Length: 142
Image (cartoon, rainbow, N blue to C red; front, top):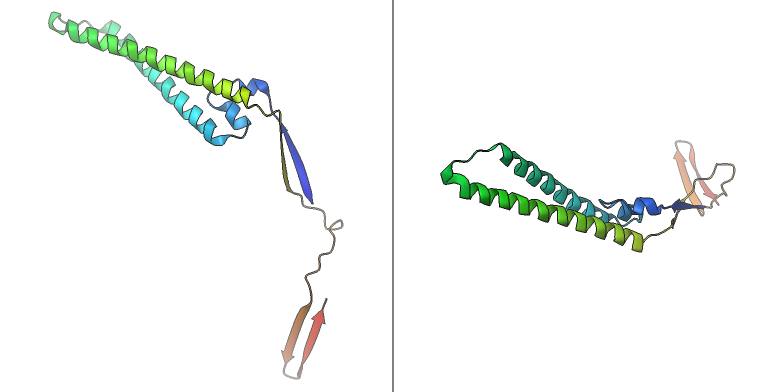
């Protein structure tokens, strides 16, 4: 016997970034891609933000001002790019999950029945041969 299972999905979950909507829609590969990509851009955003803020405590000498400006500009642009990429992938993931939203996912699986409900299944004829010291026996079961 088979059992049909219905999983009801939520549009609210489809609106969560980091692949939540893709996992809900049972698109595992795409969910992993969005989760890892968005996590990487989030980590880059945090790292460049911390790096940029740490420059406030520096007091470069006159001969290091050009290098300090280049480092500051690189960290600022890196932060803008990583935040922009994070937002772009988050929006793309939410839009993809909403466009391909599946309100109900049905699947079937075998269902175990109690012993008293199970129908006897025939295994076909069986041939049994028993041998002993005093003789033998041949038996056929159906």
